[in-house]
Length: 166
Image (cartoon, rainbow, N blue to C red; front, side, top):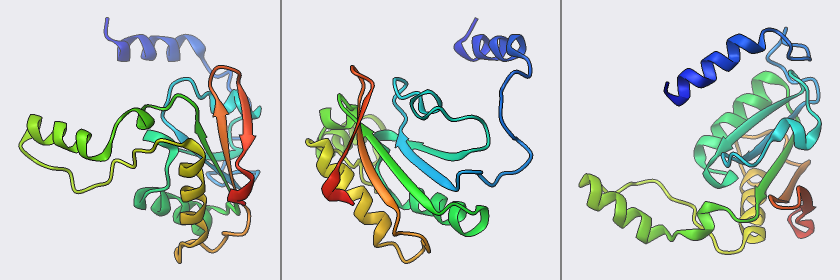
């Protein structure tokens, strides 16, 4: 049985037990949460969310990229979000690679060098600051005044605000 088969089986066994309002794509809390794809970050549990309260955007590192700006623009302009919560975390895989080394690896394996940025970083707080600033400076986003950035400690389960990112 593949991992996808396992997940599909779990879905069938779960049934319709998910609490929350699923009648609208507009999140009731009017917030978009941007975070890393890391499996240790359980967004619904961390924030006590139920279905329908928030948009959740994920990528490697939880960094603000052009594609995240695209998603945030749709979230704000068409679906009513007004706040952005950025959550990056300790022990992130992006802090364990370098931009050039990873691109070299991909080029060696495929014969093509990626044109996109890996967004590797060494200090997670600096990465959070950059991401917050990218949201605040985006001409595509009408709501940039309530953007906050945090670091989630994956071992302790605690959030720490990057205060100078406000």
